[in-house]
Image (cartoon, rainbow, N blue to C red):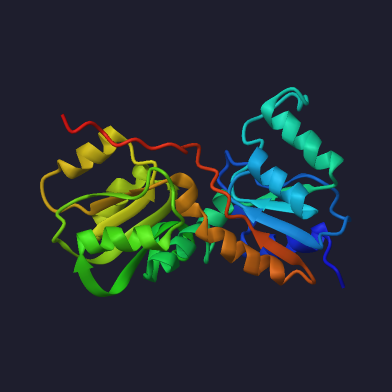
Length: 272
């Protein structure tokens, strides 16, 4: 039987329980009728114009995203606003929208498991575990064999989709890397957790200048840092979520490869 929106929601809620979401988060069905068919589904990181365009082009009836569209409280979704226009376009096109955000971050497997798998890590435990010890933000894993930090940075770059900012590292290029912490999305708030875990390197997105600099200036050993873009760090989850959706019934699933990082132009600095 062709899947319905509610069938897909049931599969996603089982994999990414809503109760794992942070109290400030907004997860679940944003718009659409649970009773409508979901024979064609688009999975992506961001609910933005580019991915809504793609869903319409492909005749998708449901978009599954990681990031919420309406994270903060709103009093209206007028069509002359950025987010309101997306809601209107989806409703007019018969497209439902569902998001799994911090519940997908904390679930096992979740966003950081997908990132760790893409890099080639064997996951050991959460970086910031919940009380049950099995779920939580981030993951700690290990490589099959140690490799120099310079090679590890190249490994991360090869594992993730290309972006204009690319992948950058901070650390001794010759340092052996075996144990690694990862956190999909903005993760510099977990720098202390990565240090306490005693890992050799930490991979995350949106590393800010001051927290990263203060981390590297600490006395004693600290993890080397690998910075990636937000979209790239969470894109591997789309394939994981697509497999979850496949369990809902007969569904044609497309994982979007459209880069929704805002950065699309790069210039090299002056050598003067």
